[in-house]
Length: 151
Image 1 (cartoon, one colour):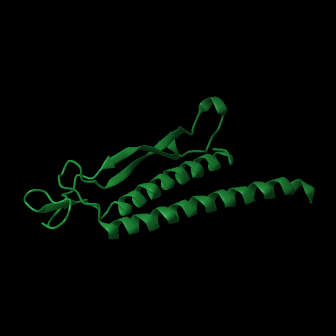
Image 2 (cartoon, rainbow, N blue to C red; image 1 turned 180 degrees about the horizontal axis):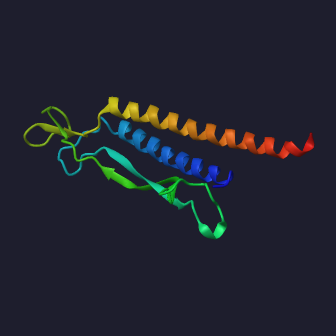
């Protein structure tokens, strides 16, 4: 793994966390939207991530000792596989005076847990910042490498 690939790995993490943050914001924004049926009610959404694997030990390149025995594929970033809707139960409230109430007087609210969404928001924000820190550290290391021959 080259020092330059660190930027690709951290960048993929930043992209994934940005999508997670946007999905969380959408969930919070729709947490109190009401509907008269279960079919039209907003459902909480969550992104699904997977690791991107990279072949680390290639005999053709002569890299020896880069990966331990049995570690022929290590993570090289993260990929967003998709966004799934939560299958949790919708909230049904009896509010006969609500404009969106059905004929029985019930209103359906999304299955969004705002406390959980706020925790996800803080987690994705901190993960994004960690990837920024990784990029800044790699940049600093590269700058130091360039100055080695100047002294």
